[in-house]
Image 1: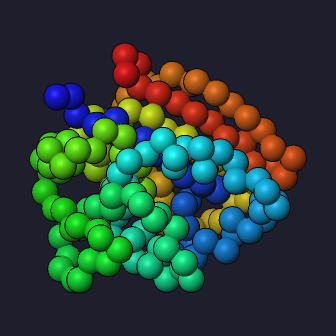
Image 2 (image 1 turned 90 degrees about the horizontal axis):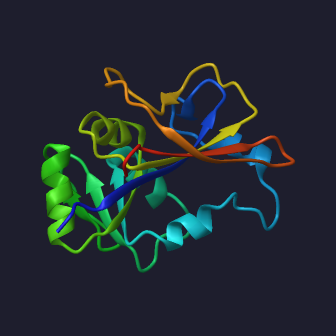
Image 3 (image 1 turned 90 degrees about the vertical axis):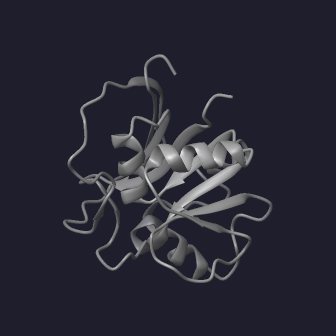
Length: 176
């Protein structure tokens, strides 16, 4: 069987940060609009598995309500702990994790977390990237991509602008 498709759906500041240095996401409120999720619900509906970085997982656990009911959750981490919401902790090289997810039945995997995305990018496993750029410069924080990374071309599939200034860019890897 082929490996699962690995997809990214993430928001960044204009200067490439996905969170404040303390992990804060309050800056995303600048583009909140009732009834508008910028395509996130449709994207998430197409995913059967989420692979979250450990820090991302811990941030999600702080939310008042678990946002992923019914989804298979894996956490990419080397730290121990007690998984919640049916999550499993996975460690190792990205290809080994991809093979484990495939063996567990994953077909479409949502990658989230800067270090996780970067590790899978470096291993040539990221198939699709949807990046929503917000009209804000944070100046510092947690970067989307962590060097060193190989250079790879992308094919632009879609761009969409929204009234609050967010621009959504959807890319795919050539041949995928």
